Image 1 (cartoon, helix red, strand yellow):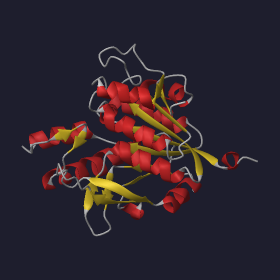
Image 2 (spheres, rainbow, N blue to C red):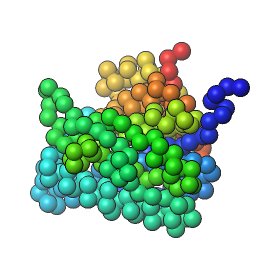
Image 3 (cartoon, helix red, strand yellow):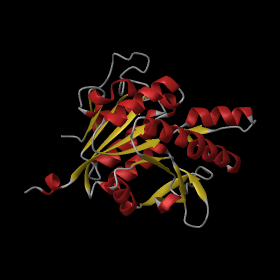
Image 4 (tube, rainbow, N blue to C red):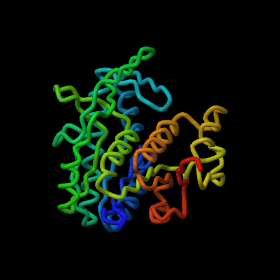
Length: 268
């Protein structure tokens, strides 16, 4: 028998800040997610709220290709917003829909260890790149019918918190757990999928192969915020994740079935 058939299925969903900022859309999405059967992990961002709070506090924010430069003050803000208000709000809404959830950062249960990003050309500050995912912890939570809800704050094992791109967190969790589960990784945001024209939502690319993505990126036809999402999607696909889709919070069930959104594919 094929070993893949012996594994349980696992859906890992990453939702972006624009969904989180719209209370009605977030509530509707989480209600639909709670109704989905089986093993689930939810990873969330929250960039818009963090940016707004930073502005109110007079702390300048810098973004490079959709990634936040995290200085000491910005780290405090993203920890408060991501690991605090947003994470607990999502958990509370899931509990309201009879879906038992537990909010975690990478420091909780030593779930995600990372190191401070090193880049010769650019100092990203306290941005973290993932080293290790605690597979056993996630298995235990899932085995007890608990949905982990992950805020993208990791730690280095030496007491330092790090801000890690949420798309990367979702990809690393998916990659690590793909050894034990048949993983479907789903990126949910405000658009219906990856678009040929960012201003025209009717131009969804149903199937996106790696070579075509590279062409679009070279031509500047992929907007900055999508680049980390797609880079991580293709990295996950090459690391054992079974299926990857990108789509809208408005039709989660269709995205999960591959009937809406964009399916990420290897080159044939």
